[in-house]
Image (cartoon, rainbow, N blue to C red; front, side):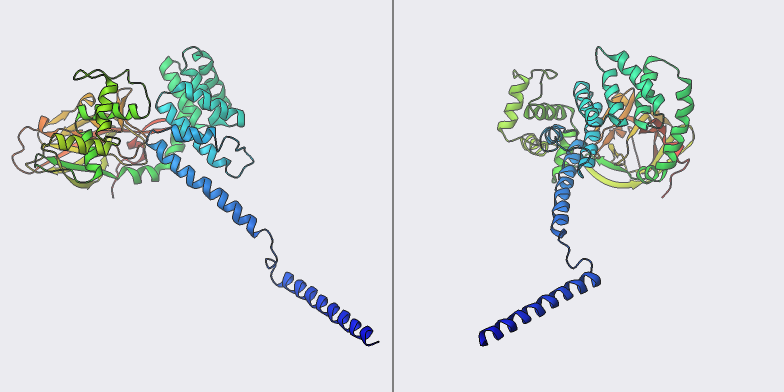
Length: 421
């Protein structure tokens, strides 16, 4: 009997405890809906998964901006090969495909561009940018130009708001000398739309020019950047580093010539054995073996004032020891320079673009055009044009500048008649 009573008491206490637990659960469910969430771990995992892709994407974009495509291609061929539109990280893959396509196009690697744009279209046959790059690659091919041109024409007429299609179709029309009245009418509208959308960004970037004054005061490079500048300031060193870089990447060396009895490959091996595996190390090694007078710079931020007829002006004051100017262009904006001249109170001297030394810029269609790399500049040998600077002298560097856009080149003057801080 005692045992029976004890069992009933235990059962009663257990039922009371279960009732209390149920009450607490219901109470907290009502008071705090998140109290019993079981998907927090899943959310954290999903966030960590996406952040891992973001970190990798940023690394790859930095390399693409330097013109290096190998890592992006490996990522797309391997880790991101199976990413599809329904995946959260697909947007990053899409951006990488776009950036890779732009870089392959800039480097005129049209066979590879055709391959990647074909893969891109296979994943999403309605993606207008993929379609644009596909037909552009066909147009630049050796045997399918007509198919590529007709594709650009047909797709632009289907999607006239696409800036990517408009840019490729515009260039194709220009190259073929064809007039498309519909496109000409639409191009002005596209230009105006781009100006309205990007005006503040362009004006902000356009104020970020720098001029460095160089003289013949002896000095030794100190920083990595100064050793790289030392290489870039000498055409022979710039070419030798390009040779070493191509050799290290396994690229063909047919464009280089034999020197000092050595083949291009032997020249590269000579410097690599000494440790010249980066541009900085090459500059250090060469400078140590050939000590010489280098250039000293004085950084100076300037305003750029846009005048009529698309001429823009950088105004500065030179000291008597100035020999060369280095003009650093604004980052994060694609520019092409059509004309350059030096103006003083008594003269205006044109400077042929073919005689201008530059870094991360190239002559394209008779214009000095920036690459995707943010560190781009050119040199002006002031001493060649102003042989005798007796005292302090005011002068202007005047340029005809176009902003390169997906809808064609637009004069900087179109964004603002006058740029001021």
